[in-house]
Amino acid sequence: MKKYLAYLRCGFLDGCAYRQYFITGMLANFIQAVVLFFVWKSIFHYQEVISGYTWEIMKQYVFVSFLCNSIFSMGFEMDAAERIIKGDIILDLLKPVSYRTMLFFRMLGTAGMEFAVTFVLVGGIYLCINGVQYLDFFRTVLFLIALLMGMGIKFCLQYLFSLLCFYTDNAYGVSKARETLTNFFSGALVPLAMFPGILREAVNFLPFRGIVYTPCCIFIGFFSIRECIFNIFLQFIWILVLGGLGTLLGKKAFSVISMYGG
Amino acid sequence: MNAIEVHDLKKNYRIVRKEPGIAGSLKHLISPRYEELSAVKGITFQIPQGESVAFLGANGAGKSTTIKMLTGIMQPSGGTIKVMGKDPFSDRIRNAKKIGVVFGQKTQLWWDIPVAETFRLLKKIYEIPEEQYRKNMEKFSNILGLQEFMDQPARKLSLGQRVRADLAAALVHDPPILFLDEPTIGIDVAVKQKIYGFLKEINRERKTTILLTSHDMKDLESLCDRLIILEKGEILFDDPMDRLFEIYGEGLSLEEIIIELFEHRRVS
Ligand SMILES: Nc1ncnc2c1ncn2[C@@H]1O[C@H](COP(=O)(O)OP(=O)(O)OP(=O)(O)O)[C@@H](O)[C@H]1O
Ligand SMILES: [Mg+2]
Image (tube, rainbow over all chains, first blue to last red):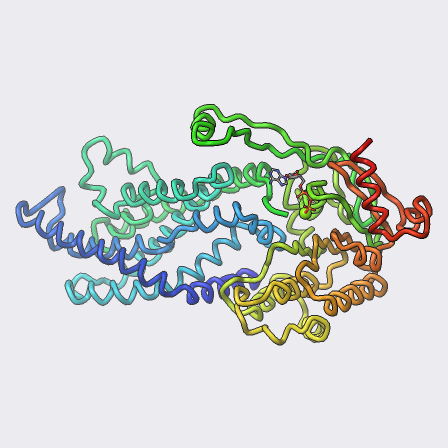
């Protein structure tokens, strides 16, 4: 475990070395959230309730979903692909550590700074707009657990997508595809409850909802405590399934990869 | 005991057959054509513990390919490898603890954070005891002059400085087996001499097994007892260094012999 904490540290330092990059990236995300905020505001101006959502709820949803979505938002497909194409992955594999666990802690370190800044920023804005009236201690704890679980799901998905880069050189495409899928099906843009008929049912069977929608609903109070527990359990199952898939496909990918350079 | 046993080792790369130009690229998109390139064609050799072996061959002979398989990061297309009795690919993590690797043209240093942080990380990864770590770092600092640039990020180092740091990074956990793929590119002669002196020392004292590739014959000659010459994925020569001189006459230098050997093979 100490080994991986050392990776966390290096990832964090690495993230700090790139802080301008982070800050511009985050600013871009943040502008998106603000735009979304005003779009919803004008929509609710015309219709008071949409699929059970009122403006009061939406005001929370926009910021909480932004927070949930911003963790690991950079994605490491590009990074992983670059290491494969340049052959630097060789150096990762030469270490007596599990590749995936190493990646997780390295990313966690790098994302740690990003997350801390976002948390303070978004939290501050949330409080300015909504005050403390909706906060509930027990729900907040459940929310944080769900948030962590969502992070796990996101990591597993990113790992799976990064394995695709073993087969294709088009890392940008892979990264964009994953981003679009997660943004749409996780509820980061539109609450899943607003999806039309069959699609709304379908997304319940996808892992993406665990990333944003589940923690958001827990925080806002759409789920009863029972539902909260059930949904967190569901997130956990998805982590196991996606993690298992990653192990399986990882084994395959590592046996076909040809190490470049030399 | 044999540190390394290789039997009928093969590696085929799948390479893309693409016609030049845009038309060729488009055609490739629709119906990609692949070809197998046989980089290593069934080689067999053993290296006993404590031996230092030079791996020699023209560009593209398959030296780096072989080393990648020996280090357990790439799966062979055929044949078997045993490093300290275990298959390095299926046992990658365990194997990684026992080996030290330098790929001269790559760096394991973190690009944007100080070199010292990389070493700190290595200490944790390999679980190196404090005492051993301190002793090693002191030694490397003397030989390789690391302290000049320990606080710099790797991207700010000169080529030679970077390679020096990489060499130290590969040795810091006292691995019983060393794979060095062109470990001295870009290093000036004075430091190079020190490095080979040091490698010779650990080879003698700690019985470290060394497999080294280099295009610098003097390096190979000064360090290695045995020579394996690869050509186009096959072993052309595998004997003690002295044998080569017996065959080709004492008067010639290793370099001259090798040049003659390659020329000769090309004609025949
Ligand atoms: N990842 C790869 N994909 C396809 N072909 C490769 C790959 N790596 C190496 N090759 C090919 O395999 C052959 C052996 O390459 P290798 O890198 O092992 O040579 P080498 O002996 O290390 O040469 P050098 O002295 O130039 O370093 C070469 O013909 C090379 O083109
Ligand atoms: Mg090579």
